[in-house]
Length: 66
Image: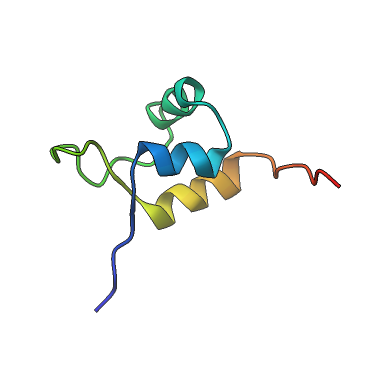
């Protein structure tokens, strides 16, 4: 059985490396993965694999600070 991994808004914000406001703009933009569920009391959640695939395809890699 496959284990389903989910991400909430905070985890997506961290994965994007952005502030809360900008991350939320991206999360609700057309083309971002649809939420896995939006009826949980904790908030909206997304499938981790879909979000990480979207980030890899749509965001430039972070620059190496060294």
